[in-house]
Every structure is written in structure tokens, then in C-alpha cells.
Image 1: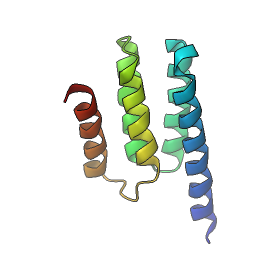
Image 2 (image 1 turned 90 degrees about the vertical axis):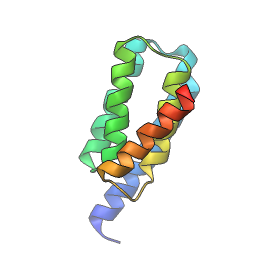
Image 3 (image 1 turned 60 degrees about the vertical axis):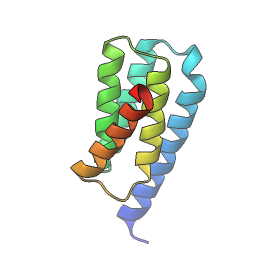
Length: 107
């Protein structure tokens, strides 16, 4: 296995773990702490070329800026978790994940 592939797999494992921890901690987190954690996830994903995760995190940060929490955050985290393991990193994949979030939230 190449170094790049191994680094990507480590980043994916780290992202999955951090997303799961965030999801479990949602009731105790302030909006500002949550925003900081999401920014860290976005940065890690960006360093490894996980464009769908980056865009989902960016959209979630926008939602947090509007003080929308609760089920909104959980839906975004679920989509981010799914996107971490996605082999497709193009704009179409990103749009599919964002559409899934909208479907979960707004039907």
C-alpha cells in the first residue's frame, strides 16, 4: 500500500472517530465549540482531498452561523460520515450528499 493511500485511510479513520464523538456529544456542546470542531473536520478533510466532506462541513458552518442546531447538525454529521468513505470526490458527489441532507431535513 502506498504512503498516500495509507495517509488517506488514517485521515478517514480519524474523521469517522471525531464525527462519532461529536454526534454523541451534541447535547453538551455549545455552538461555538461545535463550530470549532467542524472547522477542524473541514481542515482535515481538505488536506486529504475529501471535497464532499469539506463542502458539507462548510454548509454546516453556515447553518451554525444562523444558530440552527438540533436535528440539522445531526443530519449534516450523518452525511459527513457517509461522505468520508466515498470514492467519488467530484462536484456531483458533493451535490448528492447535500441533496440527501436537504431531504432528511425538509422532506
